[in-house]
Length: 237
Image (cartoon, rainbow, N blue to C red; front, side):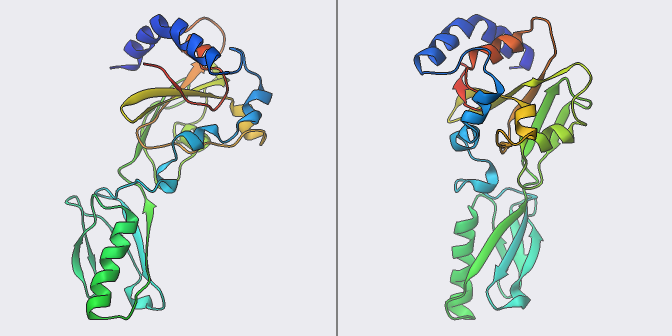
């Protein structure tokens, strides 16, 4: 469904969403910057970004830092191939795609421990999430789909799109996300984030960041007003 189509559906469902938010104890439709500061970590707590999620699985073209404690010759930065494989000293080709970093650590340690080292301590860190992308739309200089290299916050995602344009509403940022097969959205206040009154939330791969225009009635403005508290995800469909 396109964003335009989504907004049309949302305009029909707004009364239901507003009622749900009210019953859940959400803030008023026109939440202030102080509301944003009241729940600075709600976004991150609702759905961590890839760098903080234990559920992340390595994907093709990701870049990994792999190290073995006190064995510098086995410390290496590698890029996962399009088929999901990496090549390591002593071990050779290893299937990394589809595994969590923790699972890959155990696999490498198991091979090294069986043949070469005693109780090896292996660390796998995803340096660049090349397969992760964020869509930035609306009142920004360069709307588009951008790859995320490592941890990416909301401010960084907007910077990837060239920043806000002249008609942007800096208090009108909405992030759409799909989690567990359900569509969710949260609104953010950039002045509060920039001043340190609210945390700069981590963006997850697949998120859609939409910047509303300043003034006028828009479908997105209706969505924003229905979401209640800043930074807190609410179901939209």
